Image (tube, rainbow, N blue to C red; front, side, top):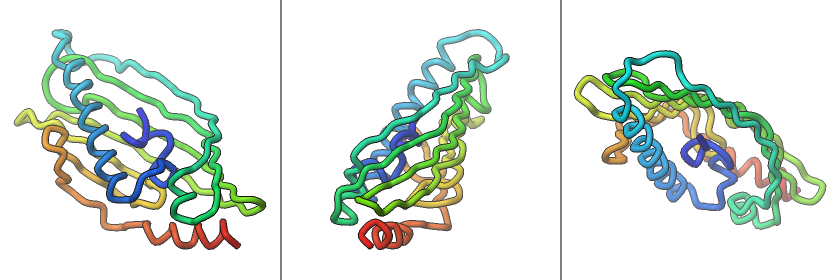
Length: 177
């Protein structure tokens, strides 16, 4: 449900470096995938209407990631929602869909930057039984596009083509101005 599996706080506000953030996302995605697979295979019912849950988010926390990257104390407010749709039953296809729309406001003294974390995560079971996670959208200070992960191995099958890590320099310039 989160964008460390793609939730709150998103990449860029999680207090870990970029390489560790990617590994953390993969580890959490793997755990979420196993949970989804357990739910998927535990039910003998055919796929029907999804179970839908909405999580409203309004949190303000010290931002360890931006604080470390920018060298000044940063606090980030996250506002928005995550909607999770879980499909039960067996077989192949979509097992879960999480959509998120989060507005973030990072503050250092009187300096403020605003950015968004938006997109969808789709967990699928392929015909060969492989569980796949697609992270689609805009992950702040990481990428826009699609990241496709094999949930069993944690291996990236498809890497996004538009990396936004350079946005971190611009954010820090604003926060330290």
